[in-house]
Amino acid sequence: MVKIPGNPRSLEIEYAIRDIVLPALELEKQGHQILKLNIGDPNKYDFDTPQFIKDAVTDAMNRGMNGYSPSTGYPEMLDAIVADEASRGTNITVDDIVVTNGVTEALQLIFYAALEPGDEVLIPGPSYPPYNTYVEMMGAKAVEYRTIEEEGWVPDVEDIRSKITGRTKAIAIINPNNPTGALYSGKSLKEVCDLVAEHPGIFIISDEIYNLMTFDEETAPTSRYSGEVPMIVLNGISKIYLAPGWRIGYLAISDPRGDLADIRDGIMRQCRSRLCANSITEYGYLAALMGPRGHIRETMEKLRRRRDLSYRRLNQIDGLSCQNIGGAFYMFPKIECLEQGPWKDDKEFALDLLHSEKVLTVFGSGFGKLYGKDHFRIVILPQEGVLEDAFDRIERFIRRRVDEV
Image (tube, rainbow, N blue to C red):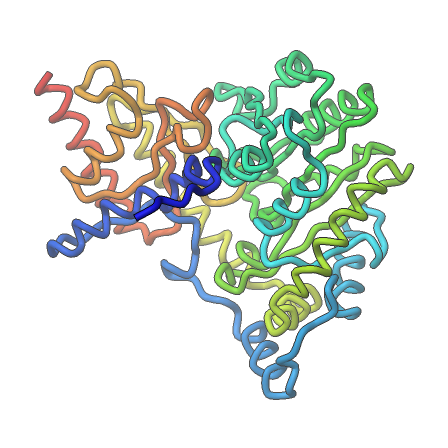
């Protein structure tokens, strides 16, 4: 046998959110029931895609819309995105949009078009793992910038400033944030945009996939503060409209001066070569953008109760501390007791919790080795009774393990 070598970068890919599921599956095969606080999929819990959105997909299918769509998306879909973005102050045209197979494909298109080996992208620390993965696959470098935990995980603008180099190509903003649940204020966004404006040759990636999932304040769109700074906005159907498995989203290029002309061309060339996004679910997203949004209020009312319960319980557990969240449905507790227990790091903590108490979380260093370490991520999507049970188990687990030491 001759072993055929693969791309070594692909062998370094880690995706903590799903990697942690593998040992959980083994436990389930042994007959154990797992309390799952790991995955940001509302439809795995007591949420479902609104019926009118599902009807739009089945109607499109029955009307014979089962072929390829245009590479950038159906014209009516592009018009709906332009209108929706304009309602928040983002000035784009249909020529600036690519409908994608989720935000993850949008990231691939951007990084493949923008990056060369040695380039750098500043990403929030902690951050959603594909930002790191796709940057590194291009031979570029993902540089974590600090977000300030004690201030609700807001960006540390001075830390960003200190990490900008001659190789910096882009700065990513995820707002509301995964994994911390942070909601950035207009002040924070303006500070980041003003900083980028001081450095020509850098553009902003503004991930707004959770933009309508907020608790106490509305999300301020980055475009409100970006001025002439080049920016690419990301959004999709997965979270707000409760259809994560449909894999449909978009990227929108806001580029007043034409700084992104080459990157735009590279994105569009890739877009044509991969044919199109999911043509049927495009019609579902179209219906979502143009239809009623009462389900968002209902979703957030449920999540508010679960957020308040989770915040209270986590901060009552000796050995943990947790910031409250302003948006999305994640919490990112700090393991204050890590050195008091038998664990060498947060991954060992999460695996021990899984095997000991059958509670599945995600280890924080999977979201960034620098600023994610010593934490773990949970989702607040389960019903209150499940959350109460999980927190009881976590509390018992920490108390027992610390006492054993």
